[in-house]
Amino acid sequence: MAAAGADLLRFITCGSVDDGKSTLIGRLLYESHVLPADQLAALDADSRRRGQPAGTPDFSLLVDGLAAEREQSITIDVAYRHFATARRRFIVADTPGHEQYTRNMVTGATTADAAVLLVDAHEGLLAQTQRHARLVSLLGIRHVLVAINKMDRVGWSRATFERLADAFRDFACPLGFADIACVPLSALYGDNVTAASTNSPWYAGPTLLGWLETIDVDSDRVGKPLRLPVQWVNRPDARFRGFAGTLESGAVRRGDTLVALPSGAQSRVARIVAPGGDLEAAVAGQAVTLTLETGIDVGRGDLLAHVTDPPAVADQLEATIIWMHEAPMLPGRAYFARIGTRTVTGTITALKHRIDVATHGELAARTLELNDIGVCTLAFDQPVAFDSYADNRATGALVLIDRLTNDTVGAGTVRFALRRAQNVHWQSLDVDKAQRAAQKAQRPRVLWFTGLSGAGKSTIANLVEKKLHAAGRHTYLLDGDNVRHGLNRDLGFRDADRVENIRRVAEVARLMTDAGLIVLVSFISPFRSERRMARELFAAGEFLEIHVDTTLEAAESRDAKGLYAKARRGELANFTGIDSPYEPPGHPELRIDTATTTPEEAADLVIACLERAGR
Image (cartoon, rainbow, N blue to C red):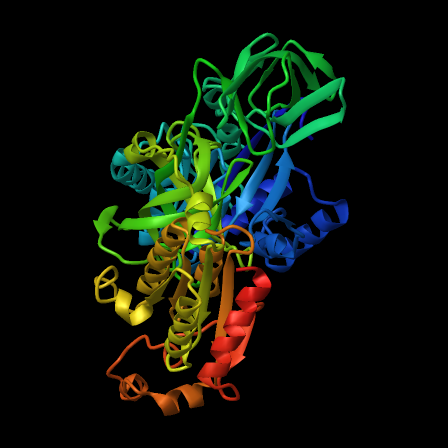
C-alpha cells in the first residue's frame, strides 16, 4: 500500500487494438498485491493450466472480470483502476483501442497527467498508435511513456527496440511532449514492468512502474497561477461564510488579495480551512475552504485567482472540439457548456475546420460527426472565466451537454478568447422596450407557429395578423418562405442550415418585440432544441408556441406547392416528414388540429390564447 501522504498520479493506457493494454493493467494490479489472496491463487492456477510459468495468467480476462469504478460526470463510460505502491497512488484510465471508441480514450485522457502508449514490437507503429499519440498531445498531456510490448516475440532484439523508439521520437517531434521515455517490456511475463529484466541487459533505463513513480507532475500545477473554481458556498450562519473548492493550480496564502471572476470583486484571504484545521498556505491539489475579509458576492461556478494574475473573461472563444455523440454537431444549436464548476448556455457559432487526426491537416467541414475533431468558435449567454488549455488544463477544458437529454455530446480545449468579445460592448439606450410598447398600447409577444409543411401555418398566421391589424394592434409576420428570399437566402435545408435558419429568425423576432411589436413567426422549425432556444430569448410569458398539427398524409394531400411529390421522387432532399424528422412540441401553449378545425376557427383560437396571456 502507498505510504501516508503519497501523491496521486492519473494516467491513461492507449494504443492500437491487441497491443496489450489489458494485460499490462492486469500485471500492474497483480504485482501491486491489490487482489484478494483467493484471486491470486486462481490466477496462478490458470497459469499452470495454460502451461505458463506462475504469475503469467491471461490478464485480459482478469481485467474484464474486475468491477470498475465508473465516471459519472459524463455519459461515456470509462473504467478506472486503482492501485498503489509505497511511493505513489495511481488511477489508470482503461479505454479500448478501437477507432470507433476514440471518444472513450478522449474521456480518460482529459483528466490524465501522463500517458502510457503501447506499441506491439512485432507490429510496429500502427496508424491507431499515431492517432492516439496525436490525441494525447492535443489534450495537453506532456509526459509520455512508450511501452514497446511483446519483446519476447522478437527475441528481445535490441535493434528492433531502438528502431521503434527512434521512429516514435521522430514522429512525435512536432507534438510538443516534455518527456518521452521508451521501455522494452513484456506485460505477460512482467519484464521491465515493475522490476528490471535479465532479458534486456542492454537496457539501462527505468522500469515502467519506476517511471510512473518518479515523474513530477505536481510541480506543473503548483508553478502555475492560482485557480480555485468555487464548488460550494458554505454559509450556515453569518459568522462563517466560506468558499470551498480544490486548488486546480498555484498556491494561496493567508492575506493574499484574490479576485472573484467573472464579477471582478476583490478581497483578502482571512482563513484557509482544511479538514485538519486552519492552514497558512495551500497548494494545487488541496481541497480547502477560504474565508475572505470583506463580504463580496461569490457563487458556485465563480473562479478565485490572484488579483495580479487573473484568467481571461469573455463570452466568445475559440476551442478545439472532440465530438462524442452519434447525432452530429450542428453550428447554431445551443448546448449547455461546463467550464470548471460553471455551467452556461453555449452555441457553436462556426466550425472553422475539421482536423485530420492522421496527418493533423485542416479539412473543410460543415458539421462534426462522432469522433471528429474540429476548431470552432463558441458564444455563451454570459461571460465565463477561463485559461487557454495550453496554459492550464483544469480551467481550459469544457464539456458540451445536450440541453434536452443531458447527454454529454462533446469535449473541448480552449484556444483563446475572440478579440471581438473584448471589443464589442452593449450600448445603453434611453428608449426601452417598455416605452415602445406603451406607445403602441400593447404587450410585445411572439406567436410561434410550428408544424409540417402544408399543415396550414402560413394560412392561419396570415388570418391572425389580419384580425390583430383590424383591432389596431402593431404586428409583423415572419414567414419561412419569405425570409429565405432575403435574410436566409444563403441557407439550404440540411440540419445545420435549418438550425441557423431558426437562430437568425429568433434573433430578428427578439428585435421586433424589443420594438414593441406582436410578432408572428411561421416556420416548420422541426427541432425542439431550436424552438427551446428561441423561447429562451424572450421574457416569461412573451413566447407562445402554437403547434399547427396534422397528419403527414393530410399535409401531403394538400401539397399545393408540389414539394411532397418532389421529395417522394427523390428530387428534394432533407424534406421534413419524408427524409428529415419533425419533433412535435411536448407542451405548446396551443395545439390546433387542422383536420377538425377550419383556418378561421384556428385564427380565433390563437386570438383567444393571446387574450388569455394578456395582450
